[in-house]
Image (cartoon, rainbow, N blue to C red; front, side, top):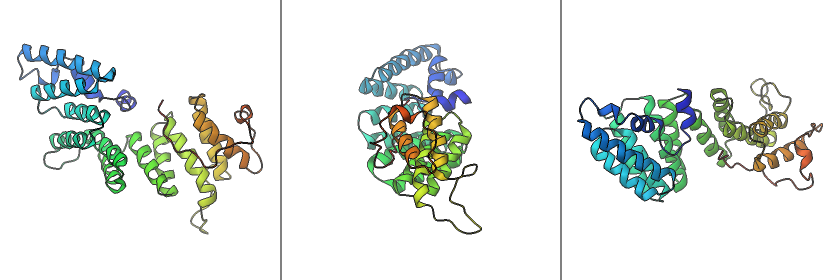
Length: 276
């Protein structure tokens, strides 16, 4: 299960990798050996093409595999990812929707739906349709509440619309599910930087500081330092960390930021997702 969560960041789903490694084991009971050999040969080449950036060849291979196993939803997820790499976002959306129909023909919920729903959310984000993107991320989380990546993506979406409390909640959940998730900690650190100034306290209901810290800036520094510990070469996070440390009162110790010019922090926190 942990391997599947880690590999959810890869270009093609884990289930497809396992299917190819087993020579189409899911279809063995109904398919003659020749089909298994063909499936494995075509699948191995499609995977190699995808990994080498030959996305059109990879897509052609995935389409051939879909003809061999038309009920295998992972093949349509893979086809969608290849088309997405080619810039055909509408074609990719059709592939993901086909995967969803195969997984839930009567609308039932299953954890496997989280992957295509998350990818649909990313597509709609690229297309600028943020309402549909949030709906897709909501569906992904409903299908699998333990998938940290979906919370991270929804958190970044909330942050784009200055919904920092919603972003904070999603990033916190992501870090609870995946304590080593760099993107979760980075998003949380940035959300807390904004909340230091945007939060409005409500007496008896809400304090403007995260649990365990005296201020949002203090929490932000702790979160961003976690990112730097996990990925010391992340310059975007380092820049955000410098700014958070510079404006903290009283000033925090600056063991990380001391190697950067204090006089030129970013004007605003960078919300880019780390691609590690």
